[in-house]
Length: 115
Picture: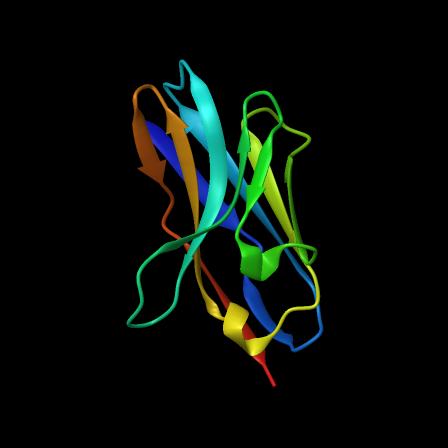
């Protein structure tokens, strides 16, 4: 079993910042990548940012220059620093872990950006 726990979501005004954190625990033998995805109501879940085991990062075009993904200080953690947030960033944010031959998901944390 692998568990992912997200934290750091909340309500913020447009132009503000938030930092999301994800901690993975359980029977993790191999981590290929960790990342963040988001899903707005009525829309599909989309990639926001990922970081591989060797530190390579990928970002959605809509967040480049505003969001930064990084490994957390603790083992098997990943953070997402979000700046210059706008109302289109409002969504449930999910942590994902690619490892052990499959993709694991957290329960999600809500980010709401008010205008």
